Image (cartoon, rainbow, N blue to C red; front, side, top):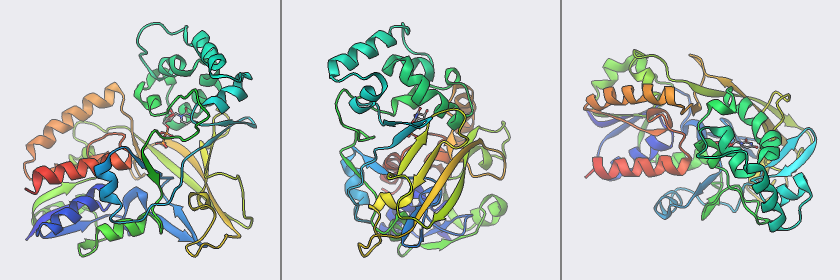
Length: 370
Ligand code: UDP
């Protein structure tokens, strides 16, 4: 009998499993996929660590989380500065002086501010949705060229039907600082995320290609408690209805050229281009392999966003009001499951970044593993 059965070998599950094991508990980790690391899984192709389930750039302001995770990997100095491609016009992201100069020809912060103020005037009162929030942050021009099309492709919904907080993730700066994140610490784990998660799981029993929900009774009987990091609605057999998720499909190509787009991420912010962004993975590690050699080839991934349906991988919870209400009902059911802890992006139905997942897992360890 294990003390804990951890369902899902992603970041939440791996952190919990590591801490429980370190405190003398017996732990079994299972995952339905044939590999560990959940959606941060990376795979080496021609010396390039490919982010198989989408780009992950670690960033945090939380010193506890940074000190914790750097025990399991060394991080490089990668700084995310995506480029937006709007019908061939290239803009610097996040919204900063380079963006405003390209958009309006303004040169000083004062001129940029005046332009934004002029355009944000159309929103009076507290923004009620993503569109109003975006216009009140950066004005209509930027909304139309850099936000509207991208967001509608990404979420499959009109910007007026999406919550404002999604766009508040992005900084707006009247300086020439194009670091996408306002984070004290940022980087990519040297050697890939998979190795980092393997280090977390060192000495922990892991069974892959094992579906919890299909073998629930038997697996439940093997442990005193369960840490479940899958979708909360799936756990309850969707009995109250399905929560909505966005899924992502990747088209990967190995190209016989050293440099396809000159940057890790290029966002296609027009409505017509069917993909949302193209990731060129080698630039997360400055185009070099583990030995520091320049790589002659490159791997790119086009990302296509779609509505999740059963059988797809869920990526993003759609945290609008309707889903919020349904999640709340599931959360109440979850509270009654005395021996089950629900954690992570899917278990808590929250648009968590990696550092928030780690912080949540550590918080859970603090209260659970006293
Ligand atoms: N966004 C946008 N244009 C961009 C990049 C982002 O409008 O070029 C908006 C979009 O609504 C997106 C949100 O900002 O869903 C958050 O973007 P982020 O890059 O943080 O998303 P993630 O990397 O988690 O997919």
